[in-house]
Length: 176
Image (cartoon, rainbow, N blue to C red; front, side):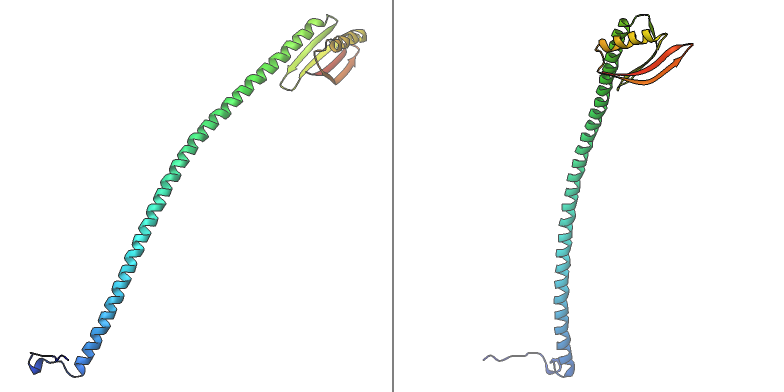
């Protein structure tokens, strides 16, 4: 066994209740210091964890921002396509009205002077004419010419008026 050799004079030796309180206090401070270092390491680790989370969220945010930019570009392209489709449908509608006008001109060339066409209204759905006939025989000739021409698949009589002064006035919807 080893013996402890103390070269300090006796008055410097540790002894008594103050020495024991000092040793207990020293041990408590060492444990407190260890707990402090442990919590310090935990806080540093938590700070590193938060930093990596922030970096991940920033990269996700940049990725989403680039996707939003791409979608905005796509949306602008779709708006342009929609506008072009509207213009194309307007052109087709104009062609349809033009075809109705051509058909109506063909019919007008078939009608003799026995009937007077007063008003023509052409839109996308139909053509509407208002005509006057002075006698029932003229009215019959007009209707026979209209039906025999086969230019229209349906003829709807919208109004029919007779006055002794003007004769017969009728309004027809012509469907191609």
